Amino acid sequence: MDADFSLSDEEKKFFHQNGYIGPITVYSPDEMERMWKTVQRETLDRSYAAYQDDAVSGGTNIANYDRHLDIDLLAQHVCNARIVDRVASILGPDLLCWRTEFFPKYPGDEGTDWHQADTFANASGKPQILWPGETEEDFGAGTITVWTAFTESTRQNGCLQIIPGTQNKMNYDETKQMVYDESRINSEEKDGVTRGFFGYDYRQLQIDPDWKPNEEDAVPLVMEKGQCVIFWSTLMHASFPNTTTGKNYRMGFAARYVPTKVRVYPNTERVEEYGGSIPLDNYGAVLVSGEDRYGHNKIARETLRGTPFMKRDAE
Image (cartoon, rainbow, N blue to C red; front, side, top):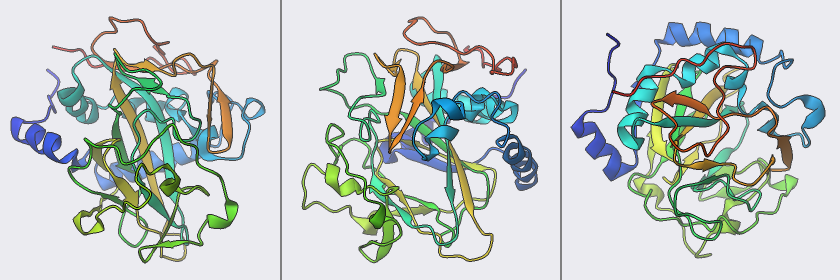
């Protein structure tokens, strides 16, 4: 019988109070190092990638979204029982992975602004996920993000920070638009830390322009390679700059989960954000646990190379 990695009652209580839990060990450091070396090599082959170069516009990280759809080790990762069982403890047994993203931070890179994400509409003005009862004008649930350290993540090389308990109130209006300004990259100190948001300024979305996050309550999430943190996307989160030199980069990999009742990319055929645009022709959400009783979303049953996704059966 498969092991059960569901959260305990005490862990669930902690999560609901604080909006996060972790670090949690998914792989040993040696396992993660071997896995990342293979994945790193395989990302160079884009012949099966969901978003082909000739269909992607803009020079942003958006081209490398959803590589779990063509790289088998990443497909196994988003279905890993050590992750899925814990997320299902929070969201219920019928569960989709709807997006993955790499988050590199190289020596000299700025930190990431404090921010929250609800419908992920902040870059395009159009919600990318909608829970039942939500509309493009009325929303407020978010997604569960599982951020895994593919390399060691330290204060010096740019680890995550979170502010516990901030997940239930949005301090930002995602219907507003941010304005790209390349000159902001690696140039602006905010409360003594060089932070930005890929050339954007998240403060432009603040509901109260004079509000500031309480950094005294911030918790740094230092992680060994192979560990993850699970958190609501509406939790206030940021990262430190990478102040190291040489080759000490930090690589995070975020997998995002919602229940099957949530509509993913409603009424759109492209994702447009942060200056990039990708078509959704080859996209499919992955059913990682349980059943899809709603039929809202296109489901990918196997990778674009033909490898079946290993779904967890709900009990």
